[in-house]
Image: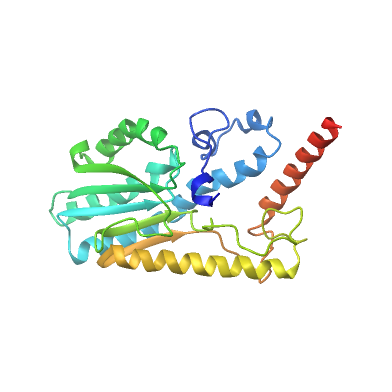
Amino acid sequence: MEVVQVLCMKGGNGDTSYAKNSLLQNESSRHAALRFAPVCFVFFIMQKKVISLTKAIIEETVTNLCCNNFPTSLCIADMGCSSGPNTFFAVLEVVSTVAKVGKKMGLRLPEIQVFLNDLPGNDFNTIFTSLPKFQKDLQKTTGAGAESCFITGVPGSFYSRLFPRKSLHFVHSSYGLQWLSQVPPGLESNKGNIYMASSSPPSVLKPYYEQFQSDFSMFLRCRSEELVEGGSMVLTFLGRRSDDPSSKECCYIWELLAVALNDMVAEEVAWLR
């Protein structure tokens, strides 16, 4: 079965859902019941922090986009939007920046079309149930009503074409592009691991490198077709300073998760015996 058919964050609004764990919460202890929750929790809480850190970059990019030729309508795509509070966080930043630029230029906020993209298994229902809150935040921040910003869900892999040619003005993606389109071939020797790890043999590193190179090239090729001339992108994904691909800078949380999963499997096997 292909990754696009099965990969998604935990839907709904329950205690173990992505929506409840994608923001830093003081009551993190209530998630301790899950053996691997501390690992996932670390990953989930980073996303809003990262979006906050890139706020200045988003503002600069959108300002340059609008100042060169302030549009009468603006099309934005957030790729890998997932579900939960973070979904509309970046969108609100972009729309607020457009409103600020328009106000300085003495122009009204243009009609804005926002496309929220993720894989088909994503919990789009949760996104749309939180839409009224976003509209209230939009009204409070920009003074614009719901008729100024139109939200559409777009299920599908961002490693393929999703929009008509020359239709997007701005593309945003935060912590989405480290997810590969498929499991790289040739990982049979990576026993006990779910990603590159300190115990992975050297032969495992090349398939991951080649898969990312292929996927990211495809992403850029597709977006180059879909962006208007002068359009912009702000893309944020995991990186590292070390030359070591299995460095703890980016891979350690997956090693911890692998340990937890292996322990759970061992306990289940022992119980069955």
